[in-house]
Image (cartoon, rainbow, N blue to C red; front, side, top):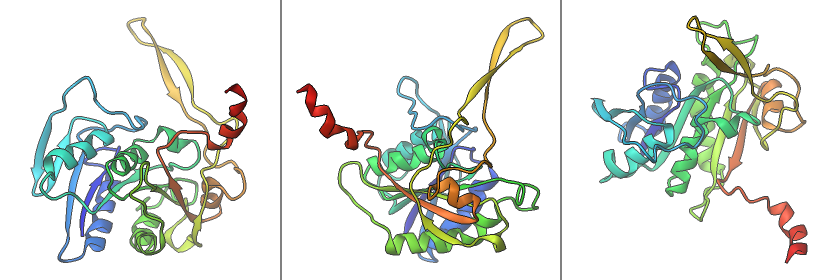
Length: 260
């Protein structure tokens, strides 16, 4: 198997090193793992592409490249340049530092890379490690992902739904905020929503008197809607969420026929 890995935390991020271990084990001794990742952190850029500016790409090592662009840019760079003669069988994005459950998935560059791969017709999975009181002080904060990533991916490849249609399915995996021994299993889950927990801004003033705004987040440990990805994560389960890039609100289409 030929696997492409990328992320949004940057090519030197520890989570990418974890994913490299998982990908190499998944690819096997006869497989290949290629890396095309952002040269610098690109968290929160979603499915952004550098449409109006070129990006520099540099080879760091054998089958390892850094691109000055977004995670989606990195997927495009791999498929249409770096790996143009031998496209990957699978794209893995992550392992993100922090969860991409619930509404976080909308903003996530990690998920954005998997989405772009799916739009390009390549099976793809985003992987993220939830942080919380039980794992944030561990020597290895990615312990759950490192211990359970390979088996989760093997199960998903074997039993998951994989389509090559328009807006094909890709997957969003979140590992729970617990030590590896505390993981209770895997749950297929819908994307949740944390009410009253959205992003905001915090004004500040620089020493030169200029006004700036910091984007602020929200606590990630509050209970969320039952059966959702974040709900299962906080209960100690790995969540696996099937996704599509299709943004149509299909449930509203029939009612909207009244305008015709």
